[in-house]
Image 1: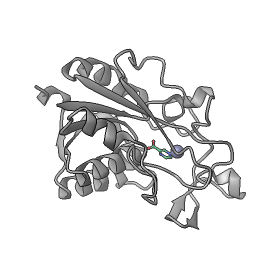
Image 2: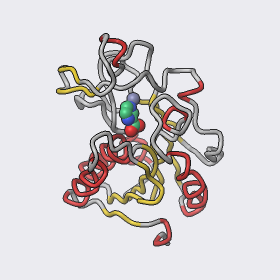
Image 3: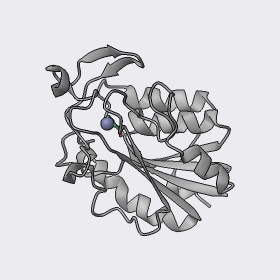
Image 4: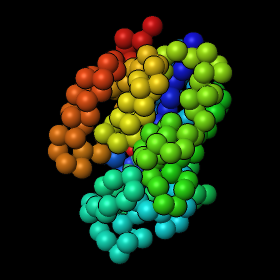
Amino acid sequence: MKALIMVDIQNDFCPGGSLAVPGGDEIIPVVNKIQDRFELIVATQDWHPREHVSFASTHGKKAGETIETAAGTQMLWPEHCVQDTWGAEFHPKLDTAQVQLVVKKGTEPDIDSYSAFFDNQKLKSTGLDRFLAENKVDSVYIVGLATDVCVKFTALDAADLGLVTYVIKDACQGVDLNPGDVDRAYADMLTRGIKVLSSKELK
Ligand code: VGL
Ligand code: ZN
């Protein structure tokens, strides 16, 4: 069975949001269009408590600065995807009617979670691995925001879990905080055996 994983297609990652990915909303028609090729659809939400460790404001620092944590170097971001706020909601144009599981991640105050599977220290699972196993999913198709952050880490963990992993390039958009981050993300993914394809190549 193959599953579609829609990563963090939330208001804060789209134009008008606090951590807007340029053109983030432009992937939504593509994502909506391909949904009918999948029997199982999962969506993730970045879902942070106030004063989350990943927020620059929590540390009196500026976005783009870093701090050291138990999970390694933590990039600091503007406040985003705060639980139960508009910014954390799915983008209103995203079709969520067929979503069978919503995975909320980054919910612990002191640890960030870029991947849909595990926190950045790999201490806790979100339960997505078990859900996919229970549903006999052997391949996953990943789309969403942002290519060089949560899409990448979700894809790398999926591949590590032994799932055949695809990333649909025209259904992802990156932050590119440092120019070249998106290209490097695709290079890392390809090196790990992840397949990158266009939505037009979907069967
Ligand atoms: C993300 C930065 C911080 C993402 C989440 O969804 O790619 N990026 N939190
Ligand atoms: Zn976040």
